[in-house]
Length: 131
Picture 1: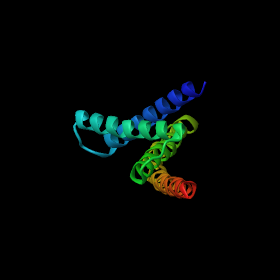
Picture 2: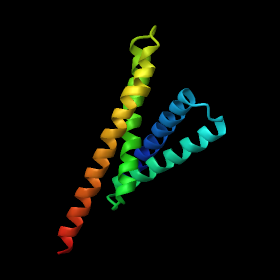
Picture 3: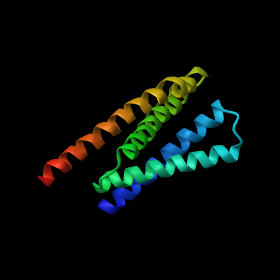
């Protein structure tokens, strides 16, 4: 059962970040679609890898925890506001922009802080267990 949950959570993180980065880059930049797709897939693999290591209880580097936390929490904030505003208020165009320009940066900041806090706490508990 735990393996199924790990696979499900990793796939969810991968798809969430793939949608988040792909949609944001498509709307806000003039990058070619191939470059947007490649960047989205790389970011999604990083988020999936971090979520797999997080659920497995494996130690992670601080940089991976910060980037992974920022991508996953930023993706959650973006997706909830971007899709939620289109589902609740169907005739407005400002809802998706709030997701891109307010919710996503806020989620990225909170996710990066949470990832740093997790990595710092995990490293401190490892040092205390070694003594």
